[in-house]
Structures are given as C-alpha cells and as structure tokens.
Length: 151
Image (cartoon, rainbow, N blue to C red; front, side):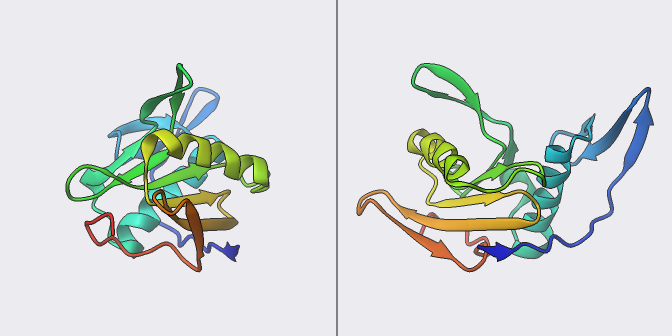
C-alpha cells in the first residue's frame, strides 16, 4: 500500500438545489458529488494527466454480469484494441481498503479480465498486476503508465 497523493485538478462544481454537482469529463454531464464520486473524478484526472491514459479509453460505471447479476464497475481503462487494461474500484475516503474490498474487485475482474487492478479510497491505494494464466498477483508500487497494450 502506498499513499496516493492525487494532485488537484480544475474541477467544475455547482450547486443544484440541495446537491453539489461536479462536471464529469467522461460522461460529459454534471453528476452528484458524493464522497465516492470525488475519489472517482480524482482518479480519472490522475490517470489522464499523470499516467497518460487516453480520455477516450476510460469508461465509468460500465455494466457487466457476474453470477447472473448485473454489476457496475467504477472505472475501466481500455487498451488500444479496446480490451480491459485497468479495473479501478473506488471507495469513499472513510471506507478502508480491506480484504473484502479486494475480494469484490478480484471477483469483478474474473469476468472483466483486466491485467491491472487498482483499489483506492483517495487516500490509500493498492495496485496489482494480475496474471490469469499463472494465477498470480504482483503488487505494484504505483499505477503503471499507459502503454496501449495488455502487456
């Protein structure tokens, strides 16, 4: 585990009734600014501005099926061929990254098949490289730069 010092970004926040809304550059609309959304938006901007992930290859809250149930991922980065490269599971800052959180993300990743997995609550993060053939995980010191491939 390492501290993930998410750098500030130029966010656009507005008030709408009782809700604060933040402009989501991927969905191109304002969304309710929950603590988890704050983490998700920071991760999106971090990946694009500081790790080279192309905006067009990031997908928020993408649906997938697991055990015949419809689930949603927080964020997936795709490789240049459109295949999952990085699965990101975001939690609000008050939710610790526990073994249960890791199991949730690993379970989702069984159907998604991303070779990189990032768990974050905005304050801490864990990143792994997953080798499905060898059935191993290697913890990484930081989120890898975008390379465009699944290697």
